[in-house]
Amino acid sequence: MIIPESFHLSSYSVQDGIRIWWVRGLPCVVISVASYDDAWLYINGWGFAQNQAGRHVATVAFAAGLTRYDKNGDGLVAKDEVSGTDPMDKMLSPANFDVFDLDRDGKLTTSDWEVLAVDALHDEAFATPAIADGRLYVRTRSMRSCFGT
Ligand SMILES: [Ca+2]
Ligand SMILES: [Ca+2]
Image 1 (cartoon, protein in one colour):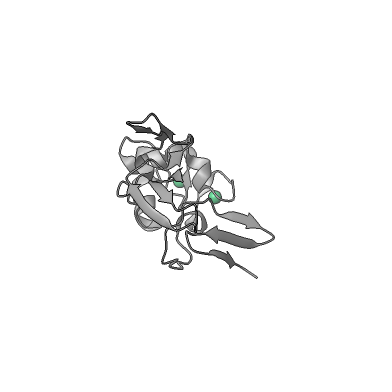
Image 2: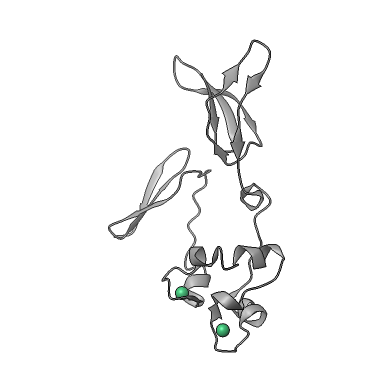
């Protein structure tokens, strides 16, 4: 069985489900099933350039972000203060700002910006994390984890 997956195309044994071979380097979003015409295997997918492995936008600490974007000096970064054309400028642009403004108050603060904790999963995770009842659920290739109380 051949299955296009995020970043992979994998072949699994029908008898026992073991992955037999795989190809890496695919886009993060693969929508179609694979099609085969006795010569070629066809798949399609798409992805943002910045969401591809090795192309993530490097971020800076909040203090450096203030130096760069806080034009009125109030210690916060408002949506209309972000401009520019480099990858980080584009990532925080008004079109994307709400993704980072976690409390939707129109300003980026340390609580929006800083990484609060890191837990190494020791595996690849392609599924979107889910939040429910104060818990964060994360699925990797080998397990599901729940964070929270
Ligand atoms: Ca400001
Ligand atoms: Ca905010």
